[in-house]
Length: 373
Image 1 (tube, rainbow, N blue to C red):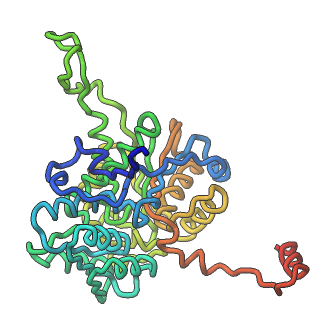
Image 2 (cartoon, helix red, strand yellow):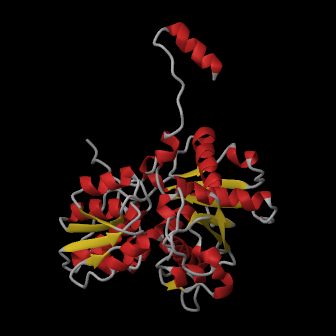
Image 3 (cartoon, rainbow, N blue to C red):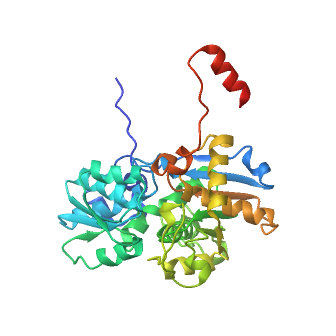
């Protein structure tokens, strides 16, 4: 009988490109290696004339991209001898932190804005045994509080650089699956760690040293030669998409009282502000915003037309892409990738609220109900 094969996780899959500390006591729940799906019908519906792919991060263990960064951050916390980890969250970070802390045998404390976290995400934090504290205020209040907890608890929000290291693997996988970088990469922006991580990943890939000819060996040795700046691979432009009610990058400053149906990006004071600004500027990209109506419409289209159910925040990336394509602002783009950051079951309330047809249980009544649809 052959040996069973398991999903390796990001630390094993990308070990040469991750911090040594993460490899001392590596953790995994099988995160990473998510599909890059080609959208077949939706682009034409929205006036998009180039190829569009989505990186579906909702198929990670806890249902979001956070698992990549959490695998690395919690592994590093374990290597450092931490007894507990903590985070503030709109939901996905807390679910992931709780799961990986449970895997590591560490305590986990999560601070959540009271009444503002989707039920599915809250349930995950409780299920994995986290100590859940609801904060009177929004995410930004919870984030300020968690940063004051002190050195004895390892903070695993994206202010922790190990989170960024894990999340950069999305870019590594994208170029491997696509055969190179897309012209444009769109993704939703909340706390802004992910857009930062994408750019770091693309930049490391672009400058990756390769075996090459030198004056001594003519290319026969395994020495890695630095790739000259003028020979680096092309990187994509980044399109950071925010919800109109939570768009500090559009406002040019943090905003109070951020509000949007896309709970995962309901953040008014992104912690990775400077890094995200630098990433977008260096990529010659830009930030944009979309309304809640545009977000929900795209969430429905992705599910009904392409069979891909993502949470509202994820749909913002495709909505932003479609908005700019319709406006004729994406000339020269041949291939675009949108990161779908979380599964639709993480935040299903808006979809679940849609009315369903009712009928008696006899076949004639059901047939009549179907005909009336």
